Amino acid sequence: MLLAELAEGFLAQKRMAVVGVSRKKGTGNAIFKALRARGHDVVPVNPKAKILAGQTCYPDLEAIPGGVDAVVIVTPPTAAEKVVRQCAEAGVSHVWMHNNALFGAGNSSASEAATRFCREHGITVIPNGCPLMFGSKADLGHKCMRWILGVTGGLPKEL
Image (cartoon, rainbow, N blue to C red):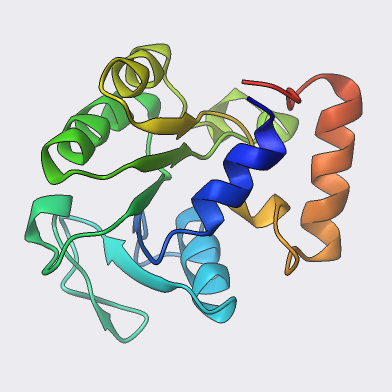
């Protein structure tokens, strides 16, 4: 399937969680705030925080009242495997593992094992790029990153 179509399907989900939001500035926080600014109902997940950005923060997906439809994972790849298992248990249908190879290997949440688990359990998974690179409200910086990753092969057209 085309990455652009998968991204559109992900961004069409009503309620999302961002796993990996923290008290410090970082990628998870930026994604959380930008998705909220775009009008999504977004829930922060971090087992070490109770409130983030003025919003109740949950320790895991199971603790979120009413659940979520989609999850953005912004954690180390080894933690992503645990998160996707929680997604399966919680009935989450869409997962995006943030992966910005443009800025080095340490900027990826993607895990081959987590990706395989999602596919084996009927979860639509995007293990590349960032959700902020897609959609009509993508900012110029993220559009440029999408283009650069696209022409350098860091962002496949199909998954």
